Amino acid sequence: MTTFQHKSKILAIAIAAIGLGLSSTATAAGPTYTNFTTQPFAETNESCTGETVDVSGVIRHHVVFVEDATGGFHSNGIFTTIAKGISSSGTRYVLNFTDRLSQYFGPGELDDEGIPLGPPVIATATFSFRLISNDGSPNLIMRAKFHITINANGEVAAFADDFQIDCR
Image (cartoon, rainbow, N blue to C red; front, side, top):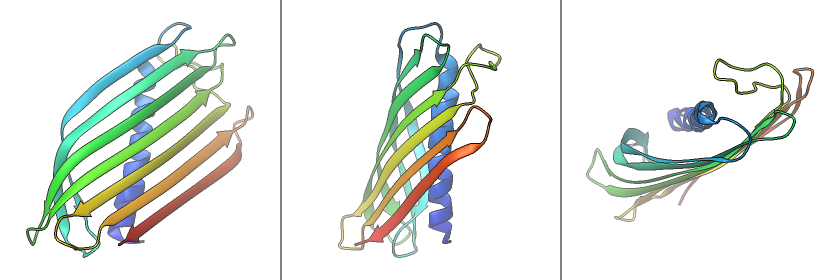
């Protein structure tokens, strides 16, 4: 696995963790809407040419939380990033990132803020990451899908992931 693939998988996990961390803002039954912007966003990525690209921009979070009648907890969110970057050789890039996260935690054990921890737990995430150059250098296109289902016994009942990187 390349350093970039490793960083990208860590990024996917981090986005999922952001979604999980946001769940602590939900309260009683009924939807709770959370919208906020994280600014500035700064990170170093690896391009298709192997150069590092320093990017900075804005991350926007739009999340809905709902507690169901049985005490289970649902959340759906979309996270978008728009950024600009420059490589170590001076190539300019535009970065776009979109992550969609859907999760469910069944009623049962609660965290410190009264949010169910499951099991069962169901989480699905898809993300798209595009690092587009302005000088004809190859563009980096990543796509990922992730799903996990943990049954009421705490066993992984389903797991799937698909991670693709294209340089064009």
